[in-house]
Length: 274
Image (tube, rainbow, N blue to C red; front, side, top):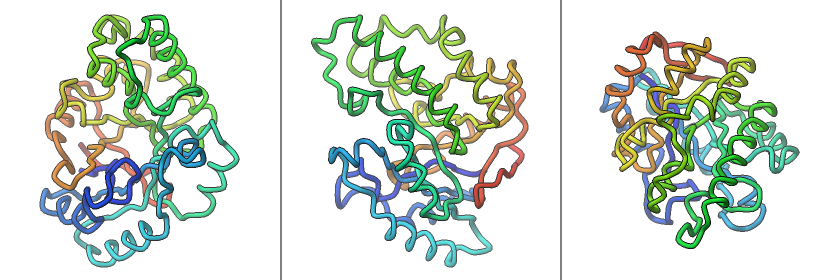
């Protein structure tokens, strides 16, 4: 299997001196018997340009990845990637970034919507329901905008805000269990039409959420709609979480009907049996 979503010590959401080196991530992937791992550090473009997040040290990341590619050659495929957040907030700058570096894989994320920094940083304690319902609806619309823009390979962690709503005690919305298909049908259809891969993000299985992002029902719905492009990503922020819960996630995907995992090299799709 391939872990298409991981973060090294360079990622802007990892405190300085924490996290894992590119080499440590690769060694962990090799020890687990994975065939490949993508280093996809965060670059939430609006947050970086606004000064909220430290800029990614692109050159250092690339240097470490190139060294790892050489060290692990023949044993583990190491992919140079990026998790590009909110690309449609600054599309010109996003496209300039993608032209500047020779990425193997580009993840597309929506961690925030216009008017906020990130769902995980919001203060929900005094927030009226109409506000967080409105943010959720805006999240879905901005995901559709991101897919329409389309200059990325994999859409990550669908249902992302739900994780933080639950963390802050909001349990009455959104109703993913009963209304998930209604919420996300336009998003899933747009992904299929664009040929963009959907991520099965296993991070929720090691968190209170207790399920992949998106959950099994939404992954089944994607399959029913004709979606076959699926990626596994641990969203690891430390080497210990590389490939975490992949066996469980892969068995779930196979039970739905998925036969192959998509991974990317030089921005080209490749397939590996689950």
